Image (cartoon, rainbow, N blue to C red; front, top):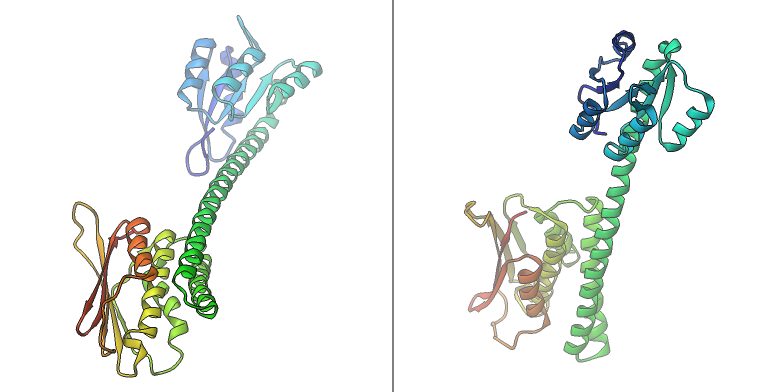
Amino acid sequence: MMDTTDRQVTILLLEDSDFDAELISEHVRQVSPEPDILRAIGRRDYVEALENGCCDVILSDYSLPGFDGMAALDLAIEKAPNTPFIFVSGVLGEEIAIESFKKGATDYVLKQRLMRLPAAIDRALAEAREKVERRRAEEQLKLLVAELSHRVKNTLATVMSIVRRSASRSSTVEDYQQTLTSRLRALSDAHALLFESNWGETDLRQVLKRTLHPFRPGQGVHIGISGPDVVLEPKAALALSLIFHELVTNAMKYGALSTDSGKVEIEWKKSPDVGAGQQIQFTWRETGGPLVETSEPGFGHTLIARSAEYELDGEARIGFRPTGLVCEIQFAAA
């Protein structure tokens, strides 16, 4: 049973009598919009139609030469289990009707009361569409639950890494508490932004501004931002949020933003779309800060490098130039 919302409905009519078939077809044509009628006379035609999957409703006589309605119902359940099946018969006793419903028939209409047929078809189509939508919703729910489980596991792994590395790099309890809280807040803010977009795509500029906002309360912090609109998938948005947080925290403590004269210029651009797909070239450039002194890379640098490699499928390069720190990140566009 396919979605019948935007296409012509096809009705498979299993009927050996030419007179009855014409009479039934006249009533079927009252359905709006008018359906296409595909007639099968015997078992071979009927099975072929079922296997082609070309029908949305099955109308079947109960008494057929060498082939009965229950056998037709069994074949429909086997080969087209989601297609509504309606018996249209001259005689259908109560016991047979009850048995057919138990086996999966949708409805039955007596040939003496064919005026009921259009309404029965409309009702069967509506119920079938409802079942299709319910199955889609259930499948979507399963996908969402699986995706949520995956994201929760990844987030917990990230949190555990942050907790462990922050502890190993902190000299005091207060320093550990401040560093850990700051990193977890950045992760939380990124999740909040993704929640606002219903865990869909978001914009690089939004992620950057949300991450930098706690560090720009007054006029003393000089950060320039420029670049085109870039769409990010949730995984990339989370990774970049943590990267931006590490960069701005380092700049506030040791780099350009630790002095009144320092500033940060942030820019990104899209590379030409070549064989590997379009790439984003992101640059964080600090100037006007204290004298740059190279040192052993800390957890922040490690987090930036690993996030770029494993979460963005890209590359991060951090350099200490005489004018200040420069971080260049290249990753694939969504």
